[in-house]
Length: 140
Picture 1 (tube, rainbow, N blue to C red):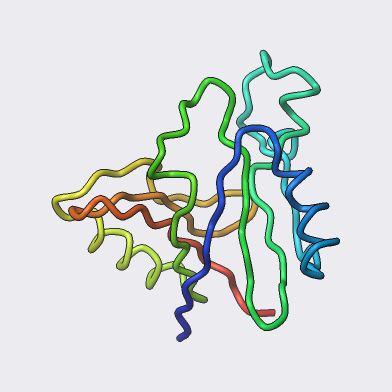
Picture 2: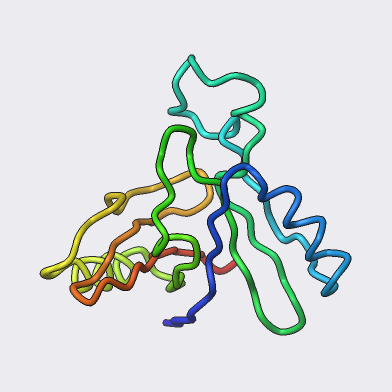
């Protein structure tokens, strides 16, 4: 069982630009990118421009990781949601347990469920106003 904390940056349509910038500025290495077009449940109203936005990306910078995404179109990006903390585990049930614990007296922003980029993912703001993304990454 492993648990790690990772900064998670959410931008408004500029994640691809940020990734290129971080590659040049601080030697970031792209580990994965999933666009909204890669997601199976996106509405037919999504244009090609919207489909090219980043739903989830993971970069390696030195020994650390950084995750990024674009806010979905039409979703206001609240000031407290621009940078969040991503808690990563290697077990779906452990991720679910953490998610359920953090939602007590808090607010669920995105229900915990399987996503194309993670077998167990959810977004929750705890009772102190800190937003966490719970991310499962299976080993192997």
